Image (cartoon, rainbow, N blue to C red):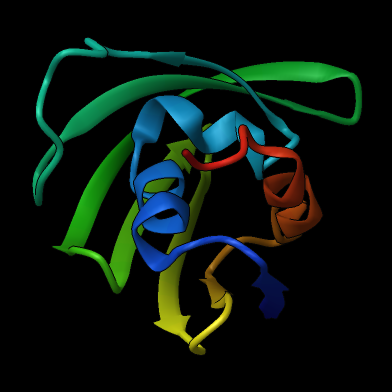
Length: 125
């Protein structure tokens, strides 16, 4: 399943938000809690705890950064209960904006993705 949006924000600012595990809840509305060290640098192999809320039930899980190619691509593997979801995010500079594509594999049902919430992020300096 693919999700795509064009944001009137710089590639660097968009990637920074999408590649921060602690900010997953900004664009994955079912993610309610992320446990991790905000000062820890991100990279391939970064592991974090998470909680998801689906159908009124909360489930504990773990996440891992499986790809990290700033400022263009990041991938996550999220494991919660018996489910595994793989998300691959790519960002492309269009000159005046950033095109974001999220490809989601393996989750049944797939996680909700709300890329529109990225429009509401803090304006850039």
